[in-house]
Length: 56
Image (tube, rainbow, N blue to C red):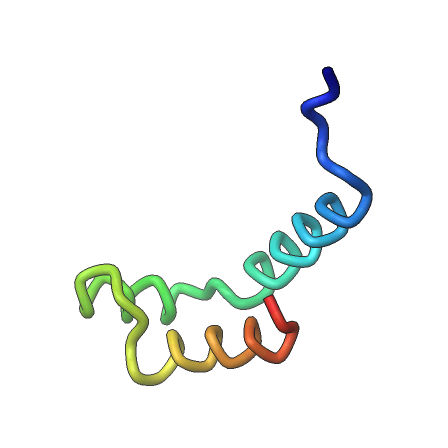
């Protein structure tokens, strides 16, 4: 049995990694901590918007 990811899944994994590497800033981390792990009103919503723009 092959438990590896399909090429499409690998592509999505890389896209998510690239986005998070670029977008997870110290400001976003501080905001998430302030809002108990939830998306904050500034940086969190900006990141969510970029994720939905990518349609995933």
